[in-house]
Image 1 (cartoon, rainbow, N blue to C red):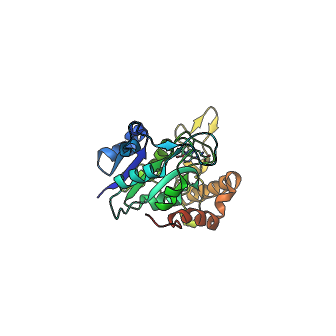
Image 2: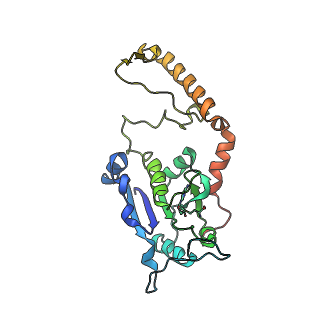
Image 3: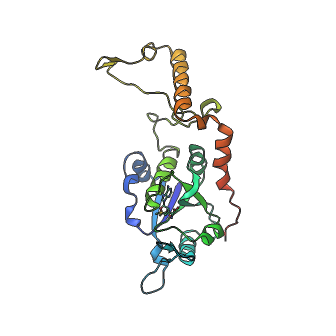
Length: 249
Ligand code: SAM
């Protein structure tokens, strides 16, 4: 069975959006993965189709109700569902390539997109959701974050990327155990506005090219992302969310 993504959202019309084009879109057309966007509102039973309420303790905004979110999860996930349930939230663990690899290697994902002030904490814990953030900024909803996570996962599904696009050498690919940013890339012309491509890349000497690229990767990682060089810390953080304390309801 192909890799399956189910999105729980108040705005199902946003999908597939950009995921319907390019690599991900071609993979979707070829049946290498599937996407179903479900409207959270479909599970409501009241006349106003209410999904949210004011926060206990006061404060601005609205919070998605636990009973509504739970019913949406139950409708989307049959008993014994093997796919992890991810809630996109700025409070989550940072999304990293190690987590992307892990999720892409599984059967797929169920993704909960928050809106307003977020989701009642009780249903997050009761359903054992993995809380994931795509960065230290606040979006107005989880849909764009879900697309980011899906795009990152889908391109790793076997067959989605052709031989022309390889994930083996790119940033965070953990070549030889290191988690490095990619070396700089150059293409034709060999000279542009008086700027020459580094000579080693024109030499045809594969070992020299490989050594130069490795040095460049290490240098740019040291300069821009020294945190990545501390691999143990990164892996510990990335693994943690897959083992939530609470068990699914
Ligand atoms: N009150 C929340 C807070 O301060 O953490 C922010 C809520 S935000 C306005 C609404 C929804 O957008 C969230 O429930 C979440 O689903 C999504 N969201 C916003 N920023 C995100 C991020 N950096 N990563 C993942 N999801 C995000």
